[in-house]
Image (cartoon, rainbow, N blue to C red; front, side, top):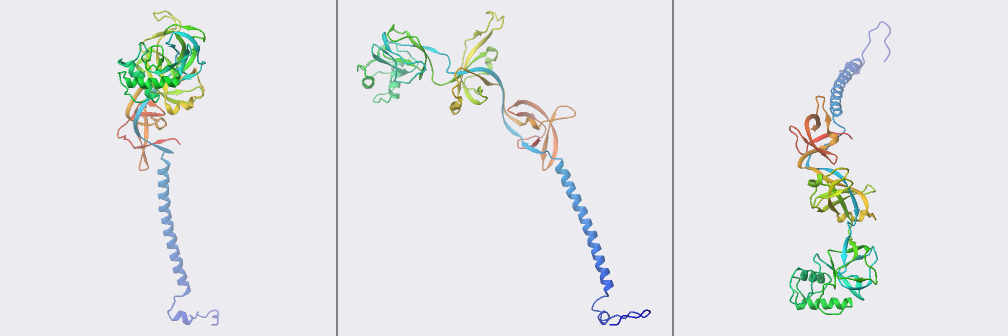
Length: 381
């Protein structure tokens, strides 16, 4: 179509006059309007969206970097006391039989039930387990705890056919004969007071007090011995006597800083004085009792070769049962004084004032209004 000359009115094309579409300028204007509206709506929406994110970010910024759970548990505070890891104090072991010593074990040797402790006049004197020294001849018709002790040892050695009780019967004598034959001894079926040595368990020879060729008198000491299990010996100040009880659990710190667990096996009742000073307590002396600790079986392999080594023993000085606890790092110092914890509930933190109790193992006993087991409290990362 020819372009209009200057001064002539613009003539619309047939497409425009047909009404099938608005003039191009209107359509453009409407498009701009729609775009403008969308921009405004988008801007408004963006404003709302950004405001929500800022609120969420603000809430998150108020949260602690990490949380821990309030637990209900037992707490115990320990006090460290010095001890010595070894085999315990040496004790004398009587040889029993009278005669000439013809053989003795070396210091450091261990002797188990049924094995010879020494030889006298060329015959073996074996070890029996028990707490009653042999003091008479054991034979059929005799009754008593020493009979039970012999029968118990025979049973542990694998001999059968009799009942372990306080009565020495013909069947007991038959079992004893079989054992005597195994040892190369005369098969008498009876046991004289000097025919065996009695100890409560395995024997570890510390030192000898007799020598081969020496003539023994009945009951003479032939060696100093200990048990074969290492233990911790404590000379405990009697002021702390109330803190320890048989079967109490303890922790032991070894010279290499490794920690093992143990159980108190005995607590002495007779006090002795340690250090310099007189009997009235003047000077540097103190009154002590003997406390023995056995290392728990699961930790015995961690003792290495220590013998006579100094150790630290942690004994319980204060204990609380079933108290609410949090890590010590959860405590906050309040401006008004005292302590609080930051409780996090549905991502909304709040500070609760608390009273503290016992501190132990990195945790602290707390009480506070509304605090319950399972609550989450803020802690540093």
